[in-house]
Length: 359
Image (cartoon, rainbow, N blue to C red):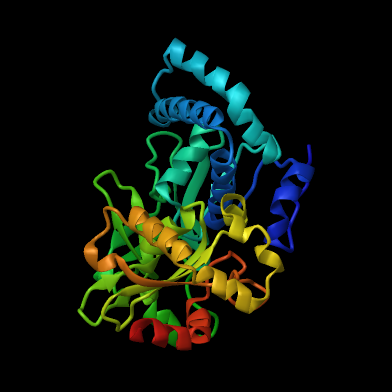
């Protein structure tokens, strides 16, 4: 027996690579699945009302079926029959777009929104979410085979002890945790508690069933001038899951309220609005003028309000600015795992930040 490993230099090539390689397994970060989810929703929204309704019915059956699987319950005969029908007509086409063979999809490196995890499970491509760091020799929690909880990062692996410390920091102890940083005793001392737990630097919580949830990196938590703490990822990730939004960056540290810089999904907008048909051919000034049109601003204001329903009022975005181009790895604005380098980007946008709070 043998196998092949394919590694991409550019994440933008993943769609074509999946079709060519047809992998059985793919290790990735949540951002990739957010992108795939966006593309699929855009295609569905651009189809006829009849096709949209057919897909919604298929997805409802897919969710019911996958929930039974998740809980380890017996599948009723009629539900199984309906699932096979919709799987053959709808879900198989989606799976084929992603190579057709994906069966093992471990994900880590950031939070994965609940609805995305549920969606891929429903179409027959369940994602296995885990959590870990280099210092913990990678994975310390993961979805169990049954009774995992969408939106969590799973439960501790055998032998792993996890508890929540001060500032809701996730603390880890087990034999696989590193002993020390090489020739750096000062840093080593900082990351271990008196009782031997490793300080991960991540804020989180554990539910009554032992499932771990990531809130944010502690160093990324923002405190407004009113004393409220903001977890930026809890605002940014839901925004980035919307089909019309590609990237979002929240600003709140030391400020009276939350604001955001939003990069629209220009491909989606080009299909929806005539003004964006030739967007990529425009120069920077023309792009900015288009994004400042009242109807465009109003559209995104409604999207933000829709996405933030249910969030606390102090987390609501009071002002926002649309940016004409995506953040990229090439310009040093994204990490290799497609996370926004917050400090780098905020420094580049410092004048815009000043302006957004002055206006």
